[in-house]
Image (cartoon, rainbow, N blue to C red; front, side, top):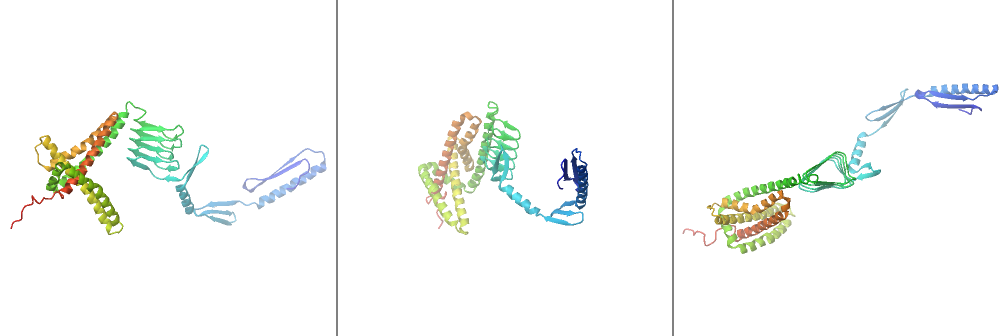
Length: 396
């Protein structure tokens, strides 16, 4: 605005609504000439302020779906168009690839993001340091370790939950019939709930074993029922063949075991090689699948042959008067499964774990021998067909 005389301080600033505010500070002086100069300067400043006020114009800004519009009261407008959809897609793709947030004064990057809930049955799960889970994490019958971040809740049933020093859970952490290990540096936004396990060792710990034992027993029972239904179907349609083949299980045990060993191991290798070669072509794929299914059916039939032979042997020893192959095969099948069932029941008492492991090992070995012997007996009997000595003579 110019230079004020001595003793005069001036300042001009823009106020709201386009007005110009001028402030002048005058110090005392005795020279009238200087006073007159000051008055002239004030008048000059007032005129300049009025001129600036007349020249100022207000602006109008409008936000639309297409972008921004900037204009004056006279109608002149400038439009800035923005592609909002493109920006939104770019932000979404950025969120799916990397997510950054501040923790402990440092930036942490997640290079892997799960946008939904994670659920596992009967297997362990690990949420690594670089992973972000936007949903919940549920593990049933397995262990869970969290090093990354979970934005939802964490639930573990019949397993162990481990939260490392880098773990972050926005929701609650619930462990039922298991154990919980949480680092002091782990961050949990909700409550930490433990039902059974380490917090109540004398009350709830046996119930954790109880729940696991129930799951094992149910699995054993379901497997036995399925095998029993398949056995009934096989014995119903192959009654005579199964009975003839079962006589060789104990009648020629070592021979049946040797032939079964060759059939199971050597036969499996040959079938897999042939199936792999045939699977190269589209036409050979169904044939390769049929070969594998046939091999599995042979193992199952061999197992049922041994069950029938064992059932007949037990009926004779226990003086059970029955010649029905269906009843005998069911008794033998139950005898082959009893060791595994007892091993599952022993899980109710964790102190009997060595006995349980022994029973499971013996049961697995007995069932393996049953498959080998049954397959060998079925092969030796040529599928339970009639021998030449017993074939009826054709009438002349």
